[in-house]
Image (cartoon, rainbow, N blue to C red; front, side, top):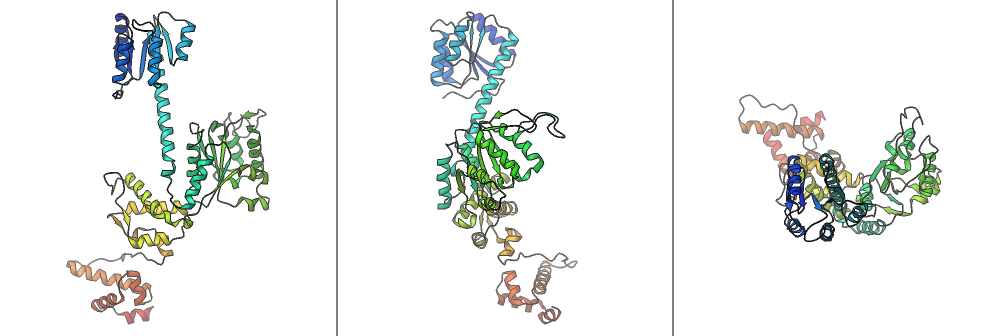
Length: 480
């Protein structure tokens, strides 16, 4: 297996049979900070390529054992990524065209200009590195938004995944509906990542967060002088998303006027920037999303019916979390793994989280209605990770609002408790316990049963402590 390229300005293989040429190029490129290796003929060069990887091959057109074009063809049979630059004393347009057709990246003639050659090699290496990085990022995008990484084993989510896999390869417009926090943008990114447009941009636009008077300019662009403050021409999101996907979130917030212009873009696949008479063709796939009932808005005249049908070519409804509670344990583990990695705490050797909720805490999570859906659960788990100091996460680590809805009261320490000077540890503990129980009795109107529930102890245990600590319950009742 070829060894990886070194982290230099670039590793270059020179294949040339003329010793003077090889030495001259090696000296020049070495002084410029390149890592250089040489080969005397085609066979020697191909053997070097088999042993290690290079950022660029500088290949002579005339070699003793075969032509440079033949070597180029052999390289391209197994390696389409490494840039190959041809070097010859017999430059011609026909030869250059043939070399490019066979996969050469550039062409220089002897004698060469040192500065132009170094600049050309630099640019070729930089371009190929950028292409490789883009390919890596595209693969990472596909992996990140693969269905394996979108958590949901419930039948409701499996149905969503099946529909997305069918829809993604097409160019049809998609309308994603669902409550806030259900993951509409995540599904939109999955559609993009699994589409033929994955190499293009994914541009998310939250229509509700852009001021109404700036929204048209943001979407369609504007020309200089179109309105006060338009100091120059500016492309809109549609042009920025050319060749890719435009995700229009909160589509229901668009004004009727903007809806009309959006409809025209969808129908004609062209737009006119604000203040311009020029028509610009656009090649964009639209994925829209809303947490509102668009059909109801259509009936009230607040959303155009023709636009609704144009957007709703393919409709995908994301179920709220309360309709797929079986996914909660999977989501919890997914978020535990993620946030433990981010916080570098409670990690197993394989990068998974060691954390787990106590049975009481997990029961609350399973019983909760989750009005904020997956986003609310994500926030609850992140809080638990930050506060965790042991592998089992107690119920107290859940958000206060969630506990209150389930009748659980977080124990709070008496804020003004100060142990007496010189008190022993047992005396401090006893006084603290007395203060804590007294405070809870006062909050509950001296109701011992309710106090026992709040402190999560048996009523008999509480009564024993009240008697031992000398707490006057009758007096507290009279003060209640």
